[in-house]
Length: 286
Image (cartoon, rainbow, N blue to C red; front, top):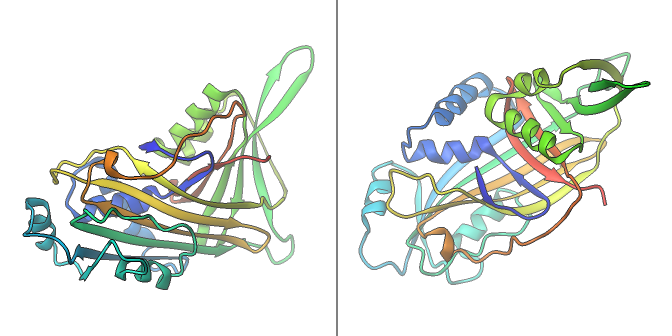
């Protein structure tokens, strides 16, 4: 799904697919996330808003822009070459405090989606917070247990899932299955498995990043989808804010730095609802 990303990153499959739904892209993942939103639409932990920003410097209207204008989206004109333009002000008003994408002044439009998720940890009245640890184990001369996946409960049946670093190919396979097939499929791939409940140890995650998605657009002749996001996980709970940009330019026109090199396997994380990831990402414990 991602084409380019920095060493530590956050992304939202939910927000990405909601942008695709706005332009009527017909792919199975869009339908999956539309069904998910129907199940969680009354919960207070998240917020989604959309707006179409048009360049005040554009000359005429391209075929792509004419297509978007038929979608009855809220629109506003702005000059992308100016600092604190209407798009940047809209993003800051939403409460996003991370790096804002520098939209090239040649962009004809930006379709923006803002997604916020906030939830404290779920606590039992008597026992406090606990987490579930999914281990795999190996029979050698001794039985060794390796924690592979942690499940931490948030309110309203949301979950924060952490995938513990292991061999890189196994780690990538587990995270890929979580993204494409869901949490249950990822857990079922851990064979043999041993599960235990434990007192919750809150992770500390603090990330701000911009990522570029692969170009799978069929309804538009030209366009790139990027996300700028922040996430904070601490003893209080989890807060994530992600802005998704559909920019009217090819990916090679977007100026951002993504080069990095590391040999250390990362931690992966996901915010889960109804077995489906809303937010995913990776981080390192340096």
